[in-house]
Length: 198
Image (cartoon, rainbow, N blue to C red; front, side, top):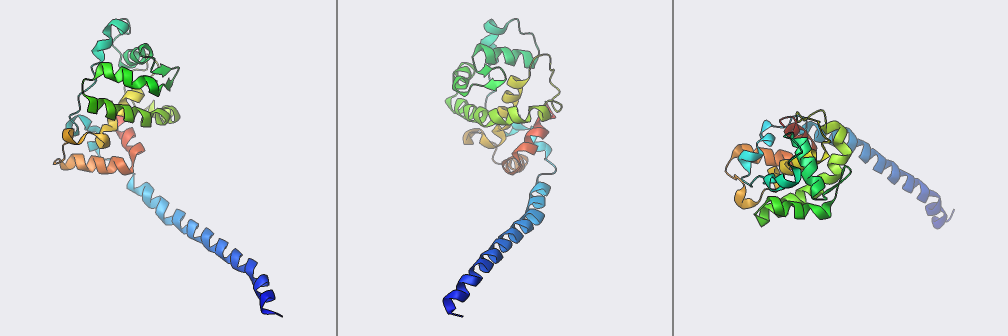
């Protein structure tokens, strides 16, 4: 048998061995790494709820919408639904990102805060829509009105734990650093912990 014939016969076997090796590596990854990642995210520290302590970014002044929403009532879900609709930032249950910044510009005076919130809303848009059924039982806020606007707002606020402007962040607070580290690695469990306190 010629040498080149031997190579042709064994080439598929080598390819098969390589494929088998890749599958084996992937199984090892799934068996050890994925459970490790899940274990890291098991228990969110309560510090992820302390956004107001860790980040001094101002709260939105939704009072500027009182004229538009004076009949919306006092429930947060109803007032925010009205504000988002009055701003055209909500279409059904979908966030209209192009209208978020104009809405924020009325509620905030700080450009840095507007930019951070605008980015946070963009990140929260698909998350809230895809996880709405999981978020709904966690929040203690009334469901007197549809809560999509409320959850978009809470999610954007919760994300300040790791998007807070540097000058507003309590960098010397160990609890805040713990919360930021956890939220960066485990953003979904961190949001669920935050929602339980709202």
